[in-house]
Image 1 (cartoon, rainbow, N blue to C red):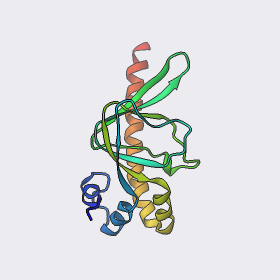
Image 2: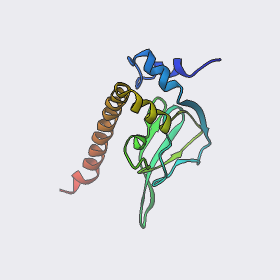
Image 3: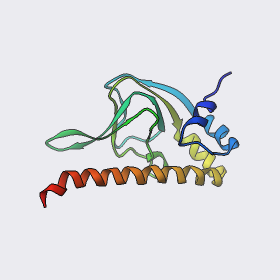
Image 4: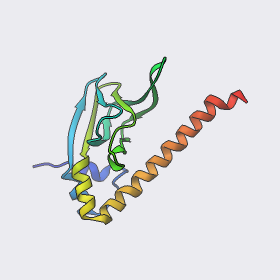
Length: 153
């Protein structure tokens, strides 16, 4: 039986991760597909998964009263979405909508949290990787805000 381990091993997020950790993570992984227009997750819902996008695009949205949904970021092939599974109360802070047919690998949050609790070194390795992504996204948001509001001064 073929597993997702070779695909995960090639992804930049998992590169240089010890093979035994990669095997544990693979046990929490599954292929998923979302049609264009499908909401993958909604703000306030429990964050059951995080996703590695293999094909397609996902818009991350916030709802602004009187404006409606506003896309704050678009994630595409090779990118990862979702770190809400890491931080209690494990709820999404954005809506995620497939903007086109999207294929991804879903990683089950409960499965991963249990494995991280059982092996804190695995948890630390994942946390280091997520913090890097979080920092990159915060810097991108900062630049967007400077573009938006910088010209008003």
